[in-house]
Amino acid sequence: MLVAMGLDCAADLPVLSSGDLAYEAVVRDWVPGRHRVWVLGKQPGSDWIHTVGCRMASGPGDAQAILVWGLVQADFEDRLGLLLADAAVRRLPMVCANPDRSVQIGACSHASAGALAAFYERLGGAVSWFGKPDPEVFRRAIALAGYADVERTVVIGDSLDTDMAGARAAGCAPVLVAPGDVEAENVAAHAVLRCFAC
Image (tube, rainbow, N blue to C red; front, top):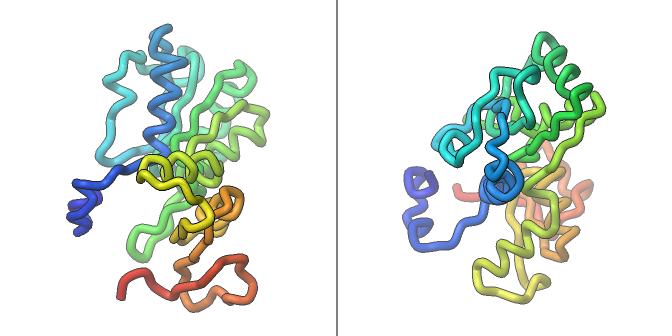
């Protein structure tokens, strides 16, 4: 996907994603028992949950676990909210493969897995979060790249809640890419860029 976006160097670089971390957890905890998994969201370019050995559930009534990833419907407080409330009562564990609450695609903002997972937590459901802002994600990425000096690592991101918060928690220098309506003096970042590549 990165190469398709014009980053040809990505083919030769190590890449770590929140999906990788969720995959590790599912394979470790759910695959051996062939868990029935209720999958929520759309994850373009990835279907690993359908191929690792878990069985697919149609809803909370026949599920043992929930995986939420990618883009989700924005009105999950309607019918989906009732199903999630049922899942919380059944104490179904949820894995969130991306903590982002929203994703910007072009000029449109879309609800993402993190928003649904946060809603499930408010219902009393148990969620395992994988990805930023967990500082361990940053440490693993730095180690994967072959570096050891966290303090000399710059994290460039566009989210205050995940990129900037996680970078600070890991001890990295955060650089925020933000549009002009974000006031630089109100952001705890090493620098604020108006665009990443102009």
